[in-house]
Length: 286
Image 1 (cartoon, rainbow, N blue to C red):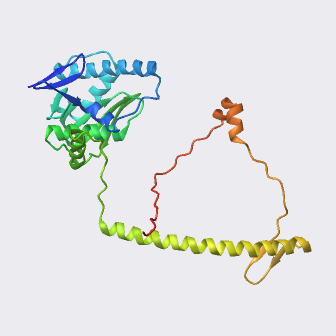
Image 2 (cartoon, rainbow, N blue to C red; image 1 turned 45 degrees about the vertical axis):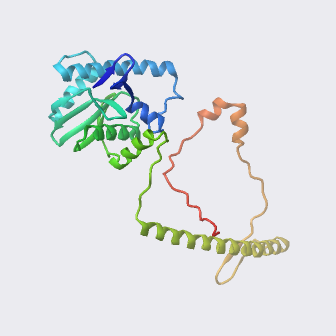
Image 3 (cartoon, one colour; image 1 turned 180 degrees about the vertical axis):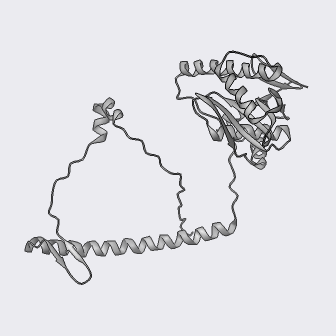
C-alpha cells in the first residue's frame, strides 16, 4: 500500500521510498532549473503558489470558496469549459515513481489532464514531461493535456504529450541507475537524402573557396592597377569595377565598455531572438 508523507512530501510503497515525479525530472535534466533565481524571491512565490493550490484543491473537493483572485478565475474557467467529474490531488504511481495530479476532468472537448502553475512563465517542455508521466501512470489516454497558468489572468494552454515510449525509456534509465537520453527516431531515407545533400554542399563549398581565392588574387592586381593610374571606375560588357580608397572605420569596443561601464553596457544591450537550428558535421572517411 502506498503511503504519502505530506510534511516531507515523500511516497513510500511497501516500505520502499519512491522517487517523486518532480525529483525524477530534475535528476534527468527534464525539470525547470531555478538555481539562478533569487531564493527569497523564489520562496515568496512558492508560498503564494501553495496557497492558490490549496484553495483550488478545497474548492474542487467540497466547494469551499476561498479569497484569492485566482480561485475566481478558475471558477469562471470551470463554467466556460463546462468542467465535470473533476478529480484533484490523486496520487498516481508504479514500482518506481509517484506523483500527485492537480486535475482530471471531463470538459466540453473531451477528457482533460491538467496541471496548475503560478510561475511567472510556463516552462512548456517540463510541463509536457510532467503531464505525460502522470498520464502514463494513470494508464489512460486523455483527449487534452494542458497547463492552467495563473499569471495576471488564467491561461489555458494545450500541450503535446511526450510519447509513452520515451516515458518508458526514462523509467528504464532510472531503474538501471543511468541518466536518460532521448532517442531520435527518423525515417532512414530522410537521413540518406540529408547525407547526400550535405556532402554535395560540402564539395560545393570547397570549390567556392578555391574560386574565391583565385578571384581575390585577380581583384588585388586590378585594385593596385586602378590605384596606380588613379582610375575610380572601370567596366566591360559583363562587369563594372569601382575603386574604394583606404579609410578608417570606427567601431565600438564592446568588451572594454562592458568591463569599464557595465551599467551603460547593460542599458543599451539589445536582445534578438535566434531561431532553432541544427549543426551538421561531415565525418572524414576512415
